[in-house]
Amino acid sequence: MNTQTLDLTGLKCPLPILKTKKALAQMQAGEVITVLATDAGAPDDFAAFCRQTGHVLLESTQAGEIFTLVVQHK
Image (cartoon, rainbow, N blue to C red):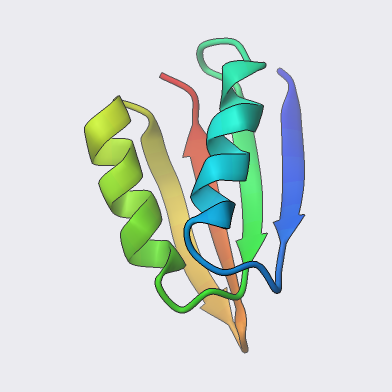
């Protein structure tokens, strides 16, 4: 299975979502993308994005200033 990681640290809303959306458009159903972000709104933004698009938020964790968001393509 194809998995990729996007390092979007330092970017502010809405760029992490927009760049993730663009990457997901190139992926197949079931593939997983891991996003690293520092925007404090990222966890809520990604949860809402997944609810709206049907993608699955598999993981949302924080280590220091870095949020790790794992999204599975619908």
